[in-house]
Image (cartoon, rainbow, N blue to C red; front, top):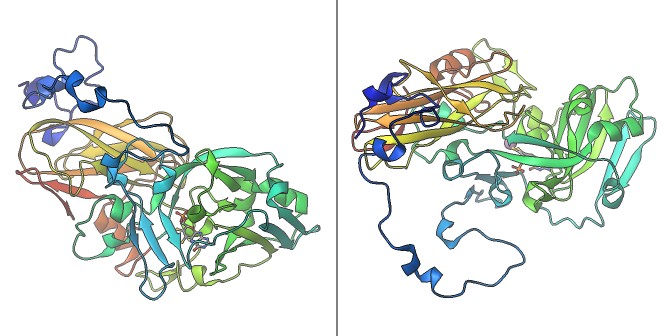
Amino acid sequence: MTQPTELQTIAGGGLLDRRVFLKKGITFSVAALASESLLAETDPAQLPWMKTPGEPLSNYGQPSAHERKTIRWTMGNSMADGNGVSWTPLHDLEGTITPNGLHFERHHNGVPQIDPAQHQLLIHGAVKKPLVFTMEALLRYPMSSKLCFIECGGNSNAGWRDVPIQTAAGYVHGMSSCSEWTGIPLKILLNEARVKGRAKWLIAEGADASAMNVSIPLEKAMDDCILAVYQNGERIRPENGYPLRLVAPGWEGVLNVKWLHRLHLSNKPAMSRNETSKYTELLPSGKARQFTFVMDAKSLITHPSYGQQLNKTGYYQISGLAWSGRGKIVKVEVSADGGKTWAVAELQDPVLSKCFTRFRIPWHWNGQTAILKSRATDETGYVQPERDALIAARGKHGYFHYNAIVSWQISNHGEITHVYA
Ligand SMILES: Nc1nc2c(c(=O)[nH]1)N[C@H]1C(S)=C(S)[C@@H](COP(=O)(O)O)O[C@H]1N2
Ligand SMILES: [Mo]
């Protein structure tokens, strides 16, 4: 077995250079770094699926029956089962795109079963020309695509608890998902309605039974918002807003109004439930913060993470996700010694603004207790805070916008738990 000293670790706890397997003239391999053979011993021609014809064609593909545990974890409400959350299993996924059937969900009153032939979008209020669109009309407008994450402002809120929650990474941090959204740039429709000079806010409302509404500054609406019709190439799923949803890249999930049917231009915000009673937080100074639209930079290691088990010592790839509502991720650092030393991880290309960014770094586990952490920096220079720093700034009464560094402890038996370290 090749020893990590020969590999020249670049930080404590066995972190290796991110290009270690790509360098020329390298004398060791992944197999040599593992503590025993990684190679299979069965003759593949003897396996049953090479001896009988396979299943017929299908109209719509489904995941393998062996992947049935890769599911959203749902949590409804005993009083109203349409009000709840489901989490994306980030710990079971790789790359950056969330499959449509695994995009997280947050509904205030269930998923409306909308007939697109009857759905309409109204633009009114402080506009010179109020407009009503059918879906058929909207589908004739120019479209563009944006690959971006949508994250609920309440994502990762278990981090505020005094005791670290022991739950799979995605079922704590997976109220965040990433898709290619395709639709009509909102600016085109607002220009067509001729927004009046006094309009400063856009109040967006959904056609669900909660008629959920939120206020969005006109500046953002004219910047990069889109009225999405497609999600990862197919029409938006009912649970994610079929047939039309607002996408406000990088901003709190709640602003991404689903089942969108009304845009009201106004000189002031609506002061709706989701911007007063919710999404407003008391700070240690006694002042409250409100309209905290942008999602701060965050990262977490998804492999290895809570619930997974390291059975052997030797080589592993650490892999995780980073994202920022302010723009591109420029750096993710990883620590394997609880934050004493850090090494820079490789970022998967292309790195896009307000989009999931996959990071990876090779690691040699020596079988001792280790604490893994990741820390993201975005293009504005913002650095993801340690938990103590976040709490010092925001107090202990927070619920929204928890983005502190996540720590996973590997025991000397290879068990992984969540720790505050
Ligand atoms: N009409 C409507 N839009 C809505 C909601 C809702 O309940 N009704 N939930 C909001 C919240 S709080 C979030 S986090 C996102 C979730 O989007 P998703 O279910 O597609 O992940 O939708 C937002 N848009
Ligand atoms: Mo949300």
